[in-house]
Image (cartoon, rainbow, N blue to C red; front, side, top):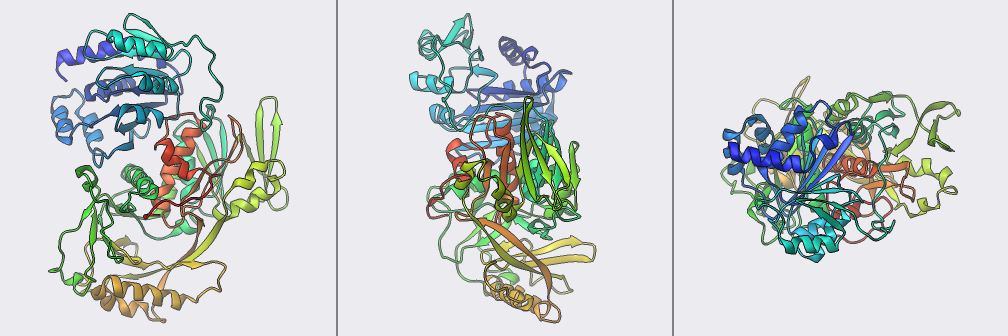
Length: 601
């Protein structure tokens, strides 16, 4: 930053009362009505240099059009802290209209970049700001001012950070009509009317970090535990198995890849948000090339549809785009002549390694061989206490909050609470789907027959994953309703081979010997699925301070959805900004009524 710009930004932060205002606070929530790169970097630097900084700093920044990556690269050359810009630039891709959550500084600084028009973006927020930074880069009217007021509580300070000396009289007037009182270039939300307590029914009141028990040590449970521990919670994770990731999350390797649909359905938008978060976390916690790799994924659209929306913008093409012709590649010979997509922001990951990394975070304790059979609630003058009891009634642990992340076992655990909590009747049903993944070690001569990256479309092939025994490949998986008589393992492997023959005929011929009954190897597990194929996330109780939560039913997309759901749950528990728009989060709500999501559902 040049010196005049630096001085202007520092003056803006001083006008906002920062960093003094956030001193010794556990979390601070800033709403910036127009994303400005120098201002954001100055905030980051001020937070980083402050010994009394909040443990978690949220910056929700709105922008009609985000700066181009080239602008960030230019800023990096001129910045006093180029490493900050570099960290930001690494995530600066695919900034389509909507919310984008970027976890910076080891996840302690959270930027939620909201791309679009001012008023709709404000209406999608579900938090009350501790500080509002206001400028006139957007067009303000009475409706956008009312939307801004929804993001404030009584006393929220508003600081002018625009390029002009102060807000124009017209802007002062519309803000004043919405409850903001001005003094010079500063204001606060101070309406002269009584605020209704039901201003937003989806919000929950902030709960200070305390103790939380998470039941289930798969992707769903471990991601919640890590998200809460990052916020200062003390978390115990209980699982019936002796080791974590004993269920569906024990898959040896899986794909994190966005879902696409011609109508850009809620599932597609949610999966993009989840993939973005998961790739950030993999970079932070796992060794690349060993436990994960940003390999990209080729998707063959065997239904013949192009998949992407008709007018897919350039920002979207940074995530998913039509694949170039591949006819000259030996491994591609004989593949069906169908449209194909290239997902650049996609990867293979070893889920169990990620689960282990999350459970190793400070503040998290794993408790194996601890099957929770009963939940017992006690309301005390100091708050709710949940007791977790084992098969013989022994006390396994207690906590002020409980999160059920135990897949299809959650409804059973809730049965004893249905009389006490009638709202549990609204919980959508879930069911189990069995599946088998076929596996083998790569052999000499496989190089020409196997693709250099994962391919999906009818099952999937992950062609090269390092293991203790050498490079492995994984194909499948099958999908079988648990209420049906189970197929024997050889039948599952046969189905996987048949899928592979359609998807990649050359690879199927090369790998066929590994699918014979005497040679077939693989992994089997059971997935928990909801009726609309989306997770169940959120409170299971009514009221402003729920203490019982669920994060379950990830289906086949646990790698895409788990961290997004964990961030959403943690945000609701702490009254923080949500990682996606409220209208989009509705499709994940634990007690929703399942509905059609359009073509891509």
